[in-house]
Figure 1 (cartoon, one colour):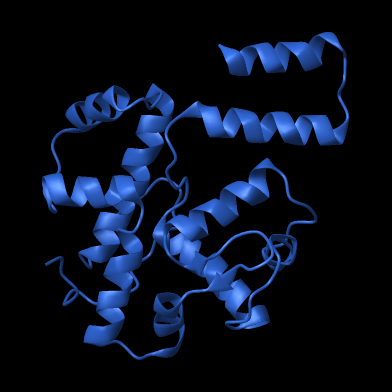
Figure 2 (figure 1 turned 90 degrees about the vertical axis):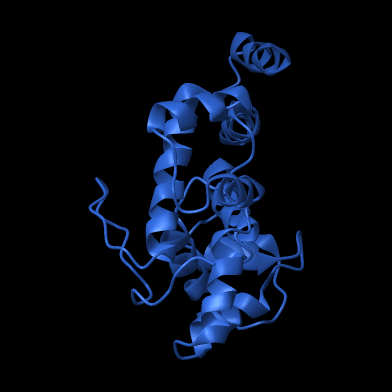
Amino acid sequence: QEVWRIILFFLLRKDYSRATLNLLEVIMAKHRSPNCPQITFAEAIEKGQKVYEKEHTHPAPNTVVAADLGYTSLNGRSLTQLGALRQYGILEGSGDALRVTDDAVVYFEMDDGPEKIAAIQRMVFAPALFAELKENFKDSLPSEGNLRHSLIQKGFLSRAADDVIKVYKANLALASGEEQDYSEGEVKPFMSAAFQLP
């Protein structure tokens, strides 16, 4: 309710400036549902590659990293992307000192093998919710209805819960080395079928 009071305050003032709209976008994003990446690991690591190519492992301000990702400013969309990369453990730090993590460097630089597989597993399941789902269900999820119910119980809105399920299933398929047909058509396996969950 507090969030909607803030939004109503700005709307009644008829303040539609870019700064205000960006602020409202961030506020709504933070209060929509519990914090969780809105993109798959495959999408996130591809974005991390762009940062690595430009910054290597040097710390950089969040505005610079956002520019590396193609954004002209810090707004709701760019902050969401930066947040996802941090949650996956592709970036670490904050503010003026964001940097590519050691695990991400292993992914970008090493050939397939045990060390790279271990780094991928740590990143794929780094988000707290994904780690919890992995711990609770391993690689055998319950029905979508059952999973959606458990996420709603955690405070997710219904649509956000559906998005989380889609992202997590894509991550789980990649981590299991299985190719599945997803509606967005952007998720592709990054390891062989020999890459299995522990």
